[in-house]
Image (cartoon, rainbow, N blue to C red; front, side, top):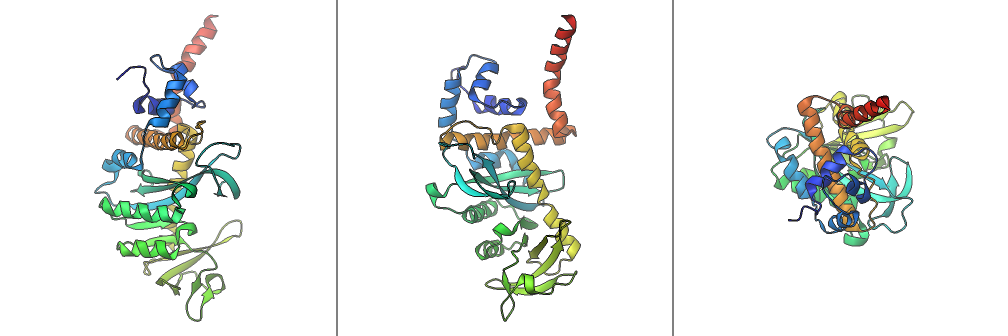
Length: 321
C-alpha cells in the first residue's frame, strides 16, 4: 500500500489530536508524510466504516460485565448546509426546535458512572431506507441480544417508549425504565397518565396495549412535570430516579465527541463520507476514553497534554526573539 494513501489509523489519530480544524485540507497540512487533501477526500468517500467496527473496539470493555443499556439520539446541526446528503428536518433537543441535521441514534453500555462505551449506532435517513428512529432502536436491541449481552435495565427517554419498543424489550426478557408521555392511556376506563393521581411512592397502572407497569411523577426545578415508567413494578422511587439519571452518560458522550473528535465538523457533501466521518469520530472517542480511564485523567487534561509541547516550543521561540 502506498504511503501517500490515507488510512483509518491516520484519520482517527488526526481527529484525536486536532482541536478545531477537521477538514481534509488541515490533515494534508499536518500529515507526517506527503498527502494531498484530494486523496483524503477520495479515501473518505470510498472507505466503509460500519457500526460493527465500533462493537469490535468496545467488545472487551463490555462483555461479561453487568451493565445498563442506554439509548438516545443526537442531531448533527447542518442548518447552513444546502447540498449535504443525509440531512433531514427533525427535532433537536439542543435547540428545542425542528432543524436541518443528520440524526444519529446511539446505544451505550454503562457499567458504572465512569465506565461506559458506545456499542452501536444508526444514522437516521428515511428517504434512503424508510426506517424511523424507533425501527433503528429495535434493530439495535436485536444486535445486543445476538451479542449475548443481557442488560440489567434498558433506559431511554419518552421518544423510545412506544408499544412496539416496550414489547420488543420484554420479548428478550429484559426490564426497562423509560420516560412516559403524559398523554399515554392507562387503566379502565382509559385515562391519560397526566390525569391520574400518582403518589410519591409511584403507582402500578395498566398501560394500554402493554400491561402492568409502575409510574412515577417527577417535577423538575423549572416546574416541568415528567413521568417515568418501569416494567419492574417492585422498584422504588429512588431506584427509578437513579436509573433515569444514568442517561447522563450518553449526553456526556455526545458532548465530548462533538468537542474533541469533530463529530459534527465534516465538510463533505456525500452521504458515504459523512457516514465514515461519524463512525471514525465514535471510534476515536472510544480510544480516547479507554486511555482516560487507564491514566485517570479528564478529557480536558488529555487535550492539554497534546497541545502543551507545541505551546512550550512556541513560547521558547518568542522569548528568544
